[in-house]
Length: 535
Ligand code: G4P
Image (cartoon, rainbow, N blue to C red; front, side, top):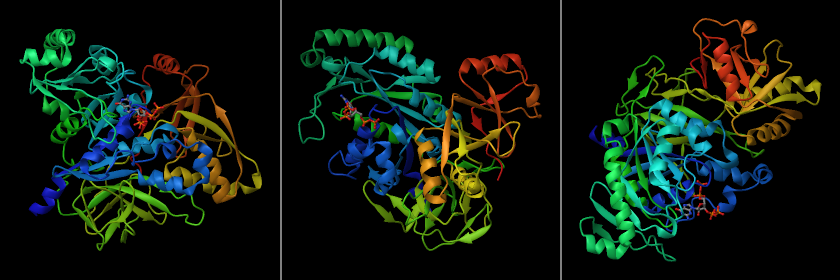
């Protein structure tokens, strides 16, 4: 089975995490350019389509197509088969963005050099850190004025709590950006902007000890500053340690400029070597399944509803965890015990969907879902009985009370809202003391409120009114023994709620209230992630 092992081991499946505008799309385009998946950078997704107003998004089904299309990009580079998982940002930011990270083996973190660590990066980083996946940092936009390099590294370490190891070192930034120093090869790579129609500008490679040549390219001032900084760095920076990188404890940092294509290919090459091939996934009972075993297994991490009324189907995205998938085989949906063929398995490429005939551990496939899959479900070979550990529930940050306009349609309302929650677009909660009458909806990105309103109206013929609530933080109660919520001493603006399984949760307006509540209830254990171990 050397072939199977080889196929699997040459796969690299990763997500790019960043704050909007840091340059994720630009970097992805450049990766694809090197992979030959596209001829000219700029066709991953048109800027116009990526930034459509919410209302357009609702109207145009094609938009959905585009958003589905960019769910995963696969391309070949230097013998590797690369899967890039899209983590929607901008208005599309939702719980799916977090769930996508559950399907990645590593993450590339793009930071805008002038801005440093920004909120969305922080949130996505937390999820990666929870999984201990390797994280590779690309500090982008060095052709614009950037923060001091030491300060940037310090910010990553302090704000995110991960050690950094710069693999290269920038020489200036903005108008004074001269290039980067490769610490391993002890060479300076000079920067020049791209000229129209070219992939990248001309780069000169200079040995750092060739002082005369170096001065003639970067100038004496930049050279002095570089020497000074490198001396400081020797005393300060963490040593490169591949084991720590792979354990998610140390992030290698690269500097570059995606737009001008400077430092991108070097980054890609290093990344591919350091990042891991598909790693084994844990089952609910704690065993780890070897990805290279013969038996196929996969788990569902995302379900995408079709917004087109004429095709009310859904696509379930699954990450293959072991073995090989081929379109003719039967599989078992573990949660229902049903044996089936996965229909219309498709792999989503940069600009087209293609029907797949085979795929390997590490790959993502999207299959037609007749309404049986839920997030976290396992699919495996019929004779096997693998059950992967569930996907956590991620903390919503926006909450609203839902009121139904026509109380006669209670049944449709409950059916609709429960189904939409089951797909994972929203989370529903109840008041702590009352029954289902009062429903509170929580979402990660505000767009999901509009999706809810739109879908209830169009698919279930139910009109609702959303009354926004001021809470921004939700915490699950993690205590092993049951806590008497009625006696819990919180702050005056804290709200007690429960989920549909009657598990208690707390809503807070700010982090200060969380701290106060923990102070007042010494035994209370709170978590930002909801466990999803129940089937
Ligand atoms: P995102 O996917 O992370 O949201 O970012 P995206 O790649 O769309 O990049 C955001 C903007 O930053 C784009 O500008 C893009 O051209 C620019 N950009 C990306 N990488 C670099 C870089 O290395 N250097 C510089 N100088 N700019 C970069 P835009 O949409 O064309 O214009 P605007 O958003 O600035 O108006």
